Length: 109
Image (tube, rainbow, N blue to C red; front, side, top):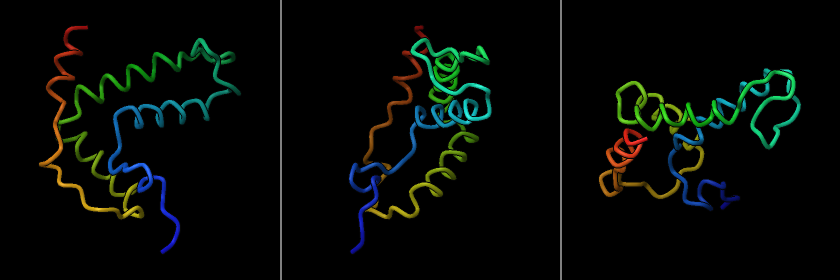
């Protein structure tokens, strides 16, 4: 029993580069003098470009996703966030690795 967590409901078992980038930008926003996100992505009081920060953070994470340092960070986040949401175990060897395709797409930018 018990209520299912959103991770189980939505079959989410690992963190994504976008989620990490979003969390970093939210932390910066919460520490800034800004009180709302504008549609332009620019902080009204701070002039911080949250939209650019997000895309730059995500680009770095995607391009470095398979490095030892980032994989250790991701493993720690996954352990902390998803430990309480014990669902069916996921076989990482059965999942497709899209890192090389993503890296090629980023290099073409």
